[in-house]
Image 1 (cartoon, one colour):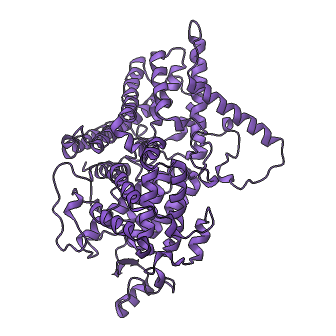
Image 2 (cartoon, one colour; image 1 turned 135 degrees about the vertical axis):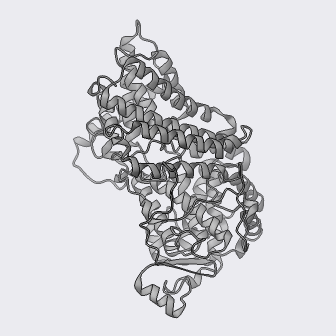
Image 3 (cartoon, helix red, strand yellow; image 1 turned 60 degrees about the horizontal axis):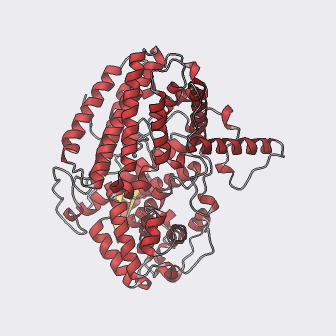
Length: 598
């Protein structure tokens, strides 16, 4: 089976890309296509009368009613000129961005970005609105990527204060740049840079709408069509590919967490993955396409994630839904496919990785963790359908342990703390859920103390799993409260601990994370009881509120059967609309006896 095939055959390719003045607009309707053929339209013709303001100074305070109404300013409008940092601070923020953010997403061309920051920081009053929104998005992301201590040590200000400042400034700058109607790639880059660090701070439903808007803006610019085929210059081709291949995982992940499972259709685009090159290999205005390198480059993490995502997209339609794989007795086929892609990743990326380079470590962890997760899911599905012997359960434990040990190692590696903002967005659900259910069985084959030592490590590395620890800003709209999946996992963890205590010769003091989880559950029960004794009403932030008490709600009501098996592995496979049997976990989360042999 070939891992990677040609572009989707169903893609409609009659559209035209109109470009000019640094803007691109994709049209694929008969009316506009005919006008373009006969009248030679420009990239912004037919937009409206507001675009004339885009190149005016940023301080001119434009009004875009649609954008302003959509984003709703968190604070009264301010003169953004006052929000710009000093030259020294701007340079520090840029260096933090290059160190902590750029290796993971490669959304900004570093040489061009460096020149932009230095020029703008020297005279903020002279920059246009497009540049300003990209600058504030970079500043905001740089702060978001730091810890409270690092922020205080570097800037002498609290993380919350700086995050609030640049969060508000970015929102206002996006509105000023008319982001809902933009045809400027830099504005879309700013919007995506704004969304990435907000994954855990906006509630899942709102975030899915926001990523959908980013996708629509990208489609309006024609990012779903490969720029090389559309005749763009080599630099624009590569940058558009980079932005598009960030939109895919962002939209896929948000669709899963919101419960819709809806993301960009695989047959609606033909954009190739970016070339394996360093930023120094491309520059604005270049005329000759860059020569692809062999080995590790600046973009290694992005490309490794892209290749694994392409593998999943390729194999899924051939082998059917992952959740039906074992029912069709295709386990051998998927195991072979996993071995093939593992060999491909080892030969193309992993063998070139240097353990001394942090982003190389992330790439290796992502590749190996995602593939191990795939193997675990296949074996869990087999166990669900056919039961499992003690030896098979020991093998499951070995696989699950490898995945969790990798997660722990990544989080405890000091050199990788710079990527903590990214790692906290993903978690290894499958192995921990299986372990917690297995350990409370009376006939478990696991070493209970070893399992709980591992669980303690996991909760230490992922304090965000303890519901109520997800809020770090004072903005109400950035307080997602209790994620339903976190609550379900927390309840399972407490029940498994209690079952283990009963099976011990004598109970031992419970770990602090269990105590904290009990407090969360108690608060939820009190809240539920209180809400049932009052007249029902719709709170202002009702999108963050679970509509019913948790114990009676299957997890699939929230995750709706679509969590990808690589979703937890540092964003490896969240760039396609994958399917998994979350009904399997629903039953296990509520009552493991449903599967007596699992």
